[in-house]
Length: 317
Image 1 (spheres, helix red, strand yellow):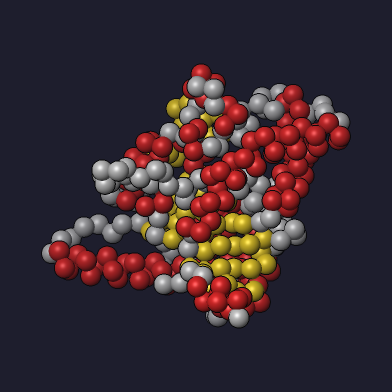
Image 2 (image 1 turned 180 degrees about the vertical axis):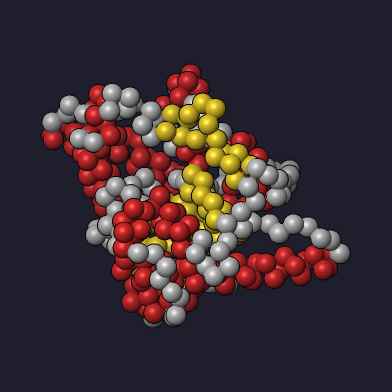
């Protein structure tokens, strides 16, 4: 009785993997195994079956949301007697470090871009809106990189405002994971896409509301749909450490890498270093800023130790 009551009161309807996979219906598979492999990030175990059972049903659901939003937009135009340009449908993808946000965002972009009407689908990560390292170092925020205060929130909000307003092109800064810094004078241009995917750690976070009731925009105010990638803490830590060990013998070996100093660590030293970074920075950020936003998402994809999605929770309408 208690479990049934909790399910009844929950704002989400939860599906097992098999139940969710059945909702694919007749949505066609438009990606090849080779394409799926190229979309996969380091240590993610995405395969064609995962796309078929998890992301194709999600693609079908998003097509319904996009169509419904477009109908509502036109209905509002008729009501107001206006003829505005169609606003893009914006999808937010949130979750912890090492949970696989980049892979999910890229797979969604590839699937959505191959809908029958071939929409223009752009993808932007919020890494580019981090303050440059010179500013973070000056403000004592290098150990807080990825925390809300390390982002140029006003620049991100201006970018999303421009996209929603149909201004073109809107420009987003570029971030280099090699140098661990924003790349000067490089931009990604977003030119009136039908769909924009925004991926980042804290995209669902809100702030303290003003007592005078003045409007304060949050990044999530611009989203039409949001996805949160979830996994248990011990699993996330294991994935982060595994990724660190792989990078130690690959990207970190590049002399230009910000983390080049870690390339000569022994296995034990690398595990200890990665664990320390996780506990000191990423776990704190998860507890204080990321995990509390999970219940603000429209869809939660819960991953198991195998990296595969085991459960899907969809917010009720």
